[in-house]
Amino acid sequence: MKVKKSWKTSAAGIAAIVISIASIAQAQFDADPLTVPNYEIAIAAIMSGLVGLFARDNDVSSEQAGVKDEG
Image (cartoon, rainbow, N blue to C red; front, side, top):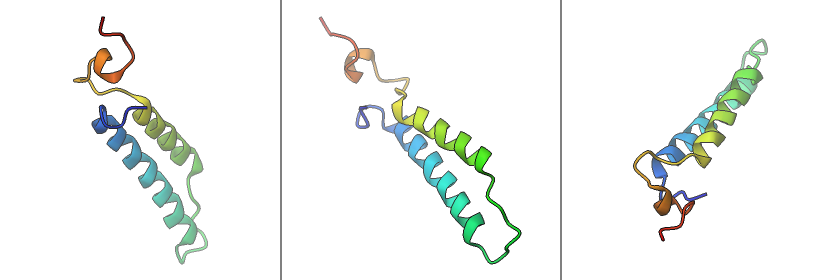
């Protein structure tokens, strides 16, 4: 995983994961006992965040990302 090379998709992935975890925590620990976290949506958002962590930015070539030889 090359975070330095594809920082835009990595940042979006991290943001999606953090927001998902924060929404679960907020629903779980608020003062209303009837509030229940929506785990299905949170898991889907976390999975899409993981995709963002492993994706490559559009402006990063295969050689820059290290997935293809330059020669």
